[in-house]
Image (cartoon, rainbow, N blue to C red; front, side):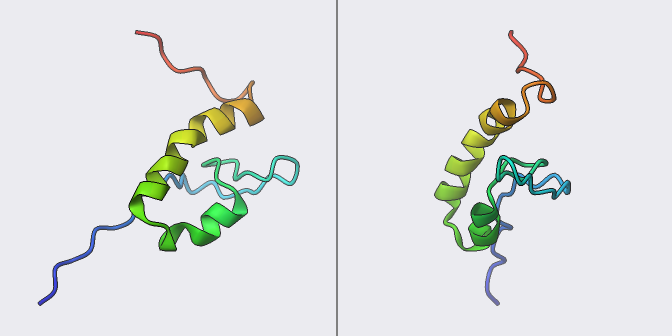
Length: 71
């Protein structure tokens, strides 16, 4: 019996709307290419992309994305 492979990490929020102006998914901030390649990306690459998503969304939609809390 082979061990179960862990599910790939994903930033998907189930709000899948690709914005024609920005080229980003309005829910998670990934590009169409990133979404298409996500399952075949190595985990370190997925984590690197996920580290950029909050800033991408903030830059694309400044009025919609709240700033991070300051401790």
